[in-house]
Length: 481
Image (cartoon, rainbow, N blue to C red; front, top):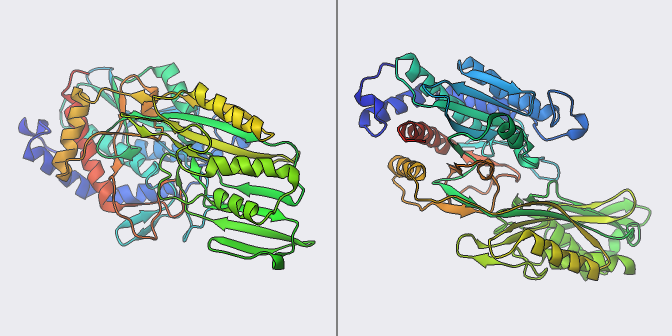
């Protein structure tokens, strides 16, 4: 990749042409690398955790798939005992300019996929499979972006900073990986994580997780109630078994009835899944089923309080009915999702709570109000996690550089924004989320969102994202980080 002095300036047409030629050359292999890592079911499984695979075999296998790709690209790799890994292009300074993505994914259980979620499908310009957008596709992009700068260095270009592609394995279920990374390596001088929308996300709502638990009341008229796969997703499927003959129940839109033996019926609700940070446009299957149970009296007297509590929690996406609604100028409105309901072995019902909250309310206030609601309905409530809102000043040289690159590559003038999701950025001293998806990008009805069935992303969007990431790294390399 011969370069001259002009090509070292990432603002020139020569630079753009060089980047475009590189992407043309490598793109087919980029797609195959995405395919190879999507094929791995990298869902956390702590029961199968062993030394070297602390989050279970799936995340470890996916991380090593990424490391194998990085080694093939001749990057300098390091595996921190399976907790987190990275691939470097050493620069003139040991100060780190980093990208961080994750190789783990959310489960697909209870979702109605039209194809094997772990066999990437290419259809009409779209890539479909678990992780193509969140976050395996972007992870592969960061490795190939690093390879671009490896080739520049081989041609004699000096990189002011060491470029590092960090490979996380625990983003979807706790982000313990980033805690390990910071404990061992500290914070990079600057980091962006490709795990959101373009252009730049400079703030993230607080993330509150909690759990309602009923008294031992399962096994009555309502025998069991189970739905959802993870707390941070709107569930697309929920099931209940009731002690009522199927013939006495009426199916309805989204609700099916089938025999469950011994005069019992299994009721299944199917909704529309989505990420807990963006519940608008979704349809919570647990709410659908809870409403059906209440409307048809399919519960014993001692089960009624739990279902009424469910109804309050699931009534709206903003916590109005459950008493935790809040808003501010920075983030807009808080959101609330009930993602997983379960029947426990000791006969209790449990329901998760995921609230993405704003600066006008605290996690402690949320816990107090939900605890009071639980007590009024003969249930208990416990806080599982509370991460406060995160915010970075948007008018900084780093963010301005990222915004400039985005505008030049896309011709779009979208503003920087805040989100309800939680990314790796909130855990570092100076970091933002940066793409790869586009806000409001229309999708065919056979393409789903992240965390949902038929997760998909446009191939040309990923291609543009790779160009943006290379350009952005070039601009950031010129700054005083």
